[in-house]
Every structure is written in C-alpha cells, then in structure tokens.
Length: 313
Image 1 (cartoon, one colour):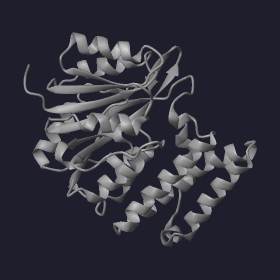
Image 2 (cartoon, helix red, strand yellow):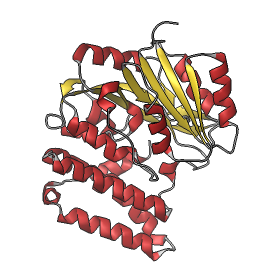
Image 3 (cartoon, helix red, strand yellow):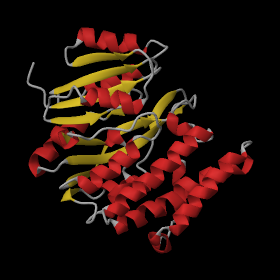
C-alpha cells in the first residue's frame, strides 16, 4: 500500500441504506492514497455491519464504534484524534464524493500551501426511484467560483457561505486544538467560520466535490427544522457564526451572511412558524430576527429575494 496522503472521517448513524454508496465513492477516487476512519455512532440498524465489512475487505478503512449515539460532533472528534496523514477531510456516511475530489483538493493545497481548500457541492434528491444530483446553487457558486488560491475571508467575504465540514480538505496541523462542539445540531457552522477567520490562507475551487443527499424519508438533521430543539441549534449556529466573523473584523463577510440568512434561512422558518403548534417556535424566531436587526451590519444588508427560488434545486 502506498503511504496515505489524506484521511477521510466518515461518521454515520442508521444510514445502512446509504453507506455503501459513500464508501464506493471513496473506492472510486482518482487519488487512491487515502484512509477512511468509519465511525458507527451507536446505530440501531446495520450501519456498523456495512462499515465492518468495508474494513475487513480493505485495510484503508478503519472502524470505530460508539456504544451509544454521541452526534456528529462527537463522531468527528473521535476521528480527528486518529488522523496521522498530511491532509484530512470529512464525508458524511450518507453523502458521496465525486471521483476527483481528493486529487483536486490535495493537489491544490500542495501547490499553494494554504491551510484548507473548499469546493462546491450539490444536493442529491430522489427522482424516479434514484438519487440524482442537482445544480450548483447560487450561494455556493458565489463562495467557490471563480477559483481563488491563497485567499482570505477579507479578500473573499462570500466564502462565508460555505459552512459545511464536508466540502473541505485541510492540512492536518490546522486542526491542532480545533474540535467540534458536542450535543448540538449544525455543529459545523461556527467551526467553518473560525476556519475562515483563523486560516493564514485558504483556496476555493468551483469543482463539485460532494453530492449531498437529501433523504427522501426526511430523516436528515437539516430536514428537521420544524422541531423546536433543532430550530434552537440552527439559530444559535447562524448567530454564532456571525459573532465569529464580527470578532475578527470581517464586516463584509457579516453582511454577506446576513444577505443569505435573510433571503434563504428566515423565509422558510417564517412559513413553518405561521402554522407551528408551539408558540415557543414563533418566539424563538422573532427573538433571532430582532437580534439580527441590532447588528451594525444589518443596515448594509440587501438580501436578494430571487435567492429563495434557489431553495428548490
């Protein structure tokens, strides 16, 4: 086996139906010098068996089992403690990498010396019995196209829209002391903004790296915003990311985030709140929007109403 170049941390809980496709997307990479740490986060289904079979058949896969669910943050942190390659990335166990994702990102980082590289991604939805990738959304395009090498959040504030863990490959040393919060949903948003403001430089590329599966059964965390605890975590993550950008003096990035939040995040939540049976849901959302209005950057925000159309595909 050649010496591994990059480690992928692959958490999963109760995703046995989707994990084979995720693992196949790793096996099919044009860059084969990878390892994958598979974390079964206390699954009640056959996810652990799928992961175990992969590890038994290919030494590049390592299986770690959590006896009980700890959440994505805890699972990713478990994997981070085991990485010993120059680069690392994340792949949720129900998503898929595009074939040249690892080659594109590791090659770019080797050329630039940046702390991390981020690429585009698309939603994958069930259509006529199979999951099919859609188009790159406008906010993702703004964050990743055109290619920018060795940039910063001050030079490229639109990069602040890329708030997911699995669209990036990093130098492993960049994660020294960096971990995900525990016990909350949307655990990657604040971490992503800290990456943006703390990196010496980062790269963005327009290549689609990941097909992000929106499960037809609606069981993804991102599909549960009608649940009050999920809403609270969601709003805390949005506001927490803004606070990180503010503290770094990245005012243009704060404005960019406000534009997106007001155009894309708030309207669907308002729709849910209009018929939600729990008054606390409306109260939480109203408190959040009131806080946004107090931000100095709010007066500079100019959300594009057309972005709400992009919520479809």
